[in-house]
Structure formats: structure tokens, C-alpha cells
View 1 (cartoon, rainbow, N blue to C red):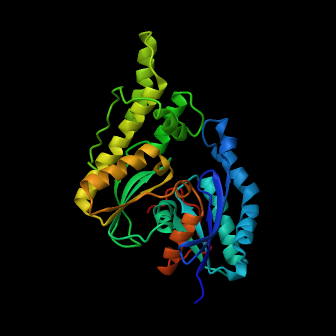
View 2: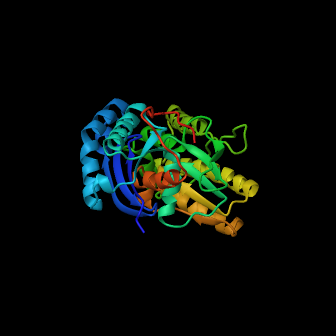
View 3: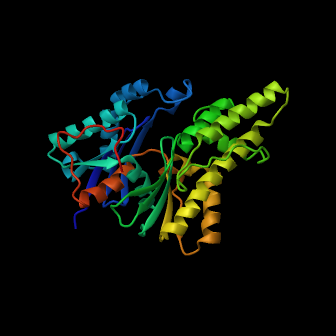
Length: 335
């Protein structure tokens, strides 16, 4: 029986990524051209710079992915692409490349939501069981997504302000850590203790998140120490921030599991690589919800990549999702 081959393109932020995925589970190639070193000197992603580098990289990355997978475009069944959300200029490069390939080789175009990709990255390690609850945590998103089946998405909780990854990066900058701050806060926290009391956010909706107050609390704590000629230990402050932020995630996840009674909970997104979050959610589920299976993706599946878009694209393709010539980058694309 012939495999279903999907060529997938992801360019929503600062990674130019192309993958070839067979039958939604086998990754034949997964090529990522990262821009982290470029954006480090700015302390964050500069959209105009990222877009320009996508233009420089996209053709090369497509060619490399096809070569590594040992396939030609004629062998591909459909072209999947991240339509949104993300940085509009960055998305545009990927969408235009995918549309061009689909048109030139007479292949169906399959637009994919970036968050669906992050959730379906977990399918690369196990079969997903529904109903499913996903805790999506990244630089641009903090959401609780309920899926009653494989192609229904209900956002039951979202952030009211900053995404958790954004808060980590901003606090990292406040502490003078390199970019991306989340990685370095995780490392520094291992050397510290949770001894500083920071403001715990309480959004109106019980499943929603908020991190701007916590981020501001770190800044105010440092300024207060400076005014009073007091010292603080950066590792302890990093640990206190991380523990407070993750406690907020787990409180909402626990409430959602009680309310929705899923068969499985999955972590998704870049912040899913955080070692403290991975440990804490495993402990929470095993202690309080032993009937729920907890899936934590390997680190390689947490950050942006095109393999996850290929997996989600396969499901979308099977459900008849198609794009046409009018398909454009949509930074506010809804799940």
C-alpha cells in the first residue's frame, strides 16, 4: 500500500523548517535552519530580519529535505504549511513557497494551524487517545485545548496578556541572561531556591492564565532591593519566578482535568522543554489522576519544526482540508 507523503513547511517565527512525513508518523526528513544566533544580539526576534533570512533559506531547506528523504516532488501527495498564527512576514515566506510548490507540481495545499502542529508532535511518540487535553506553552501561546476527537479543537483556557514563554524571555532579560531567556532561567533555577514571594496572578476566568503581573513583580522586586541597598541571589529569584509561573500552569491544568475528564493530557510548545514543568506535570498526573495518560514530547519535538506540521497536515489532509490560490498568511489564525 502506497504511503501518504506530506511535504511540510514551517516559518511562523525564526526557524525556516521543511519536513517530509510518511503516513503521519514516520519522519523521513526534518530540516531546520535556525536564526537564534542572529537574534541573540537583539535580545529577541526582529520580525524584518527574520523574514529576510527566511527568503535566503527557504529554497535551500526545501531541497535539503527532499534530498534527505530521498524523494522527488512528484512523489509527494500534498504540501502542508503553517498558515498562522505567527509573525506575518515570516508566515508569508512559508505560505508563498508552499503555494508555489503546490501549483507547480499540481499538489493539494493543506493549511495548518501552528498550535495543531505542536499538539500533534506528540503523535510521533505515541498514539493519541481522545478525548484529549493539551497544555500548550510557548513564546506566543499559553492555552488549554480540549479535543473530543482527532480534528476538533476547543480552547478552554488562554492567557489574558503575556504568553509564558514571553514572560520567561523578558524575565531572563531583566536578570541579564542571554536570549532565549527561558533556557537560561531553567538552568539557573537548578542552582537556586524558591525563597522569594512573587505575585501570583488570578485571572477572572478559572482556566485562563496571566503572566504580566508576575513578570512586573520580578522587576519591582529588583528595584526595591536597589532602593533599599539590599542584595538578592539571581539563582533564587530565577527559581522563585519559575516555580510561581509553573504553579499557575498546573493549577489550571488540574482544574481542566477535573472538569473535562480526558483520557490523555499532552504538553506542547517550546516551554514544554522546561525541565521543572516536565517533572511537575508528571508528578501531578501520577499522584492525582492515575487514570489519565500523561505524554511529554521529546525535546526535539518541543521547539518549532516542520515534522509537527507534517503530522498535523496529514490529519488535515485526511479530513479534506484544502487551501487554494487565495490562501494567505494569517497571524491571527484561529484554532
